[in-house]
Amino acid sequence: MAIQALLVDTDVFSYLTWQRAQAQPFKEIVEGRLLALSFVTVGEVYYGAVHAGWGEQRQKRLADALSRYTILPGTFEIARRFGDIKAQFRDQFDERDMWIAATAIAHALPIATNNLRHFKPMSEQCGFDIEHPSLS
Image: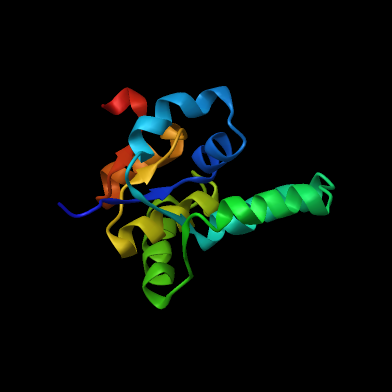
């Protein structure tokens, strides 16, 4: 049986990486899967680290955590899909979430997210799957 890949949204990455209480229900979703992150998530977490003034040691822990994921770079297809999503939803959702959704569509991956408010409407209109403990 092939290993199923999963795109992990920024919130779930953060829960799992820093072992937050919210991680527990997502552990079953990610277990045994090939985990990927959008380039957007990498940018978001590094912004958070710099903005919070993290020192060298904590940034190294972040880099180590990121190295356990496949990082999906921006591509023409992702940019095209982003344009479709942005045209449809305009300013209803954060553009970073639209980029992550575009990454999921371009790579035909489901997204593990805790942000159902943004991703559920996009998934229903744009045809990608989301994974969340409440949807099991």
